[in-house]
Image (cartoon, one colour):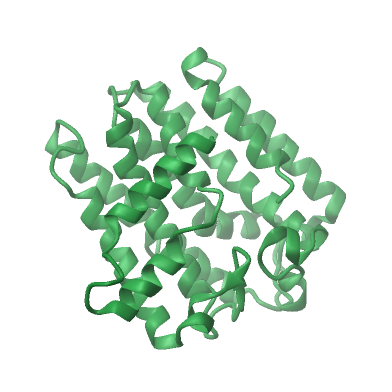
Length: 289
């Protein structure tokens, strides 16, 4: 995991414009938002799914950093005053605090564009139709039917009671869509999986997307700001619906465990080539920060 994280960090640094190049402030903000922090869970999932499909790691790297650039842009925008109004991310001031709101907005826009530039590079895969499919997959996962749509529902839900199916739908879009895209993009870098294999991989990734959010909600309620690297207890203070507010802390932990078990079942038909995916399921659910 440490080796893959270092590989992703290096590739992200190389993919982004040098801060010495104009417009320097924008490029500096982009690099500030992306480098030097984060668990890189989405790239790790892409690499694990790439192993499942015997993909060239160099190709997976491009897909992995494209997803991470989308994730980073979303954090920059989510932290802004018009959204969640957070001042701390990954243990340092958020981009709009360190720079300014206009620069943060532009940095997020530029990171989103860069993600598709990276994914569109020639040679990512041998088949042009597969590459177009990958671009479509990332676009759908990022847009109104994915991450952006989930964030819109999240903003509308502040202060309102949600039932569990509504909460799950919100997070299938907001958090889950990009996590599912990570696994599917990694797999598309390698051999063509059959329909059954793709269904099982996607179900695994769906479980991981929900489990990741459940654990995030638990940690937000149960861990310190110093541990998280972001403001703890922010969801409760903002009166946001979460798995903890709906189910309670103990039941939320149980749900994360059930999703982990379901993810392992989804991988039951695979052999040792799915071992990294199994390990990531454990890591995502059992992580403490």
